[in-house]
Length: 124
Image (cartoon, rainbow, N blue to C red; front, side, top):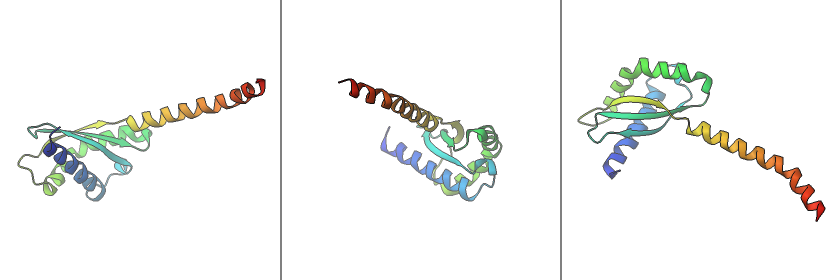
């Protein structure tokens, strides 16, 4: 990805977090984090990847983002200095949850193998 697009994506991400924190008052978006932004080269669309701390609130968060998309975009437009303000497409990013699940599984395997190792050591 060209350096300019990387900068644009990082700035959109930073400003979106600011908008969600300071300008949007919806409890469904309280524990929402923008994990990545991927903007097309023509600046027409930004895929905004988000994660939420409590997956039980995912549907409410998705609905709130859909409902408030134009308001979020308007606030973003006031903060960014771009010729074209990209359309925002919010996409749930479950990589954090996936990583936590993998980590838990690894811990489980390690815990299960600990007694097995002790028994193997006694046999030698």
